[in-house]
Length: 261
Ligand SMILES: Nc1ncnc2c1ncn2[C@@H]1O[C@H](COP(=O)(O)OP(=O)(O)OP(=O)(O)O)[C@@H](O)[C@H]1O
Image 1 (cartoon, protein in one colour):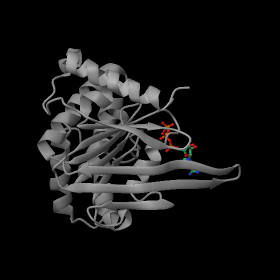
Image 2: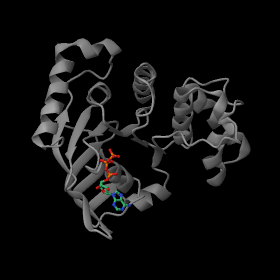
Image 3: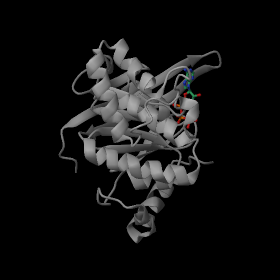
Image 4: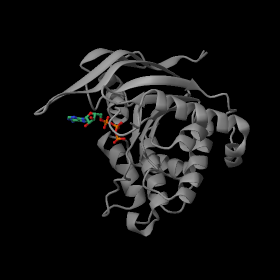
């Protein structure tokens, strides 16, 4: 049971896109509570609505049914209160700006003063282990470092909630392992609430306190699995029977939803 204060609450949330080929039921009857400091992964096959759910939480899409609240507000009010940082699959850094310049951009738009910006940039570069790289341009960094820079950018204005849409999907496995470890360390250090979309069962099991298994047509939640793993997780936890049993449970959940038919 989750005793933490709830940050995100979805009640019978539905989202139907009207397309030229007819309605697409991207989400249907989604019920979910995410508590303060939870690390929640969304897993399921293409088209099950993972991204749509994350975007709805971030007020980038509007549900067509049900109720969705963030910190007790509408998602749009929460966005205006700077409740979220959002990390996309591609780092999306501007090539003509340095790493520090990229991190600075949203802060400039939000009206943070120069001295404050400088401090914040330094702090988040430290957090993602990129101290000393602020003056480099994106193309001078590896893919994994660029993705860390984009996480730093999402952290810079101190949002309590970090929403991440397959942030490591395009990276090779070794880099991904390292970033998964770094993300857990960052989560432990900052206590943020994290919503994380992935296609990878081991990644979901390694990172999450809770795994939300989804299924398409219509996009819905088929199983919510609470992780019994401790919060502190060295990479080799993946070889333990508890980890393997949990991965099995997720796989069963995916099969149950006939997700890969
Ligand atoms: N703007 C849109 N207009 C119309 N249909 C959309 C739109 N965005 C998403 N969809 C449809 O909604 C459904 C859910 O899409 P969504 O991107 O949320 O799935 P996903 O689980 O994140 O998939 P993937 O793993 O491929 O990113 C899909 O059928 C998709 O084609």
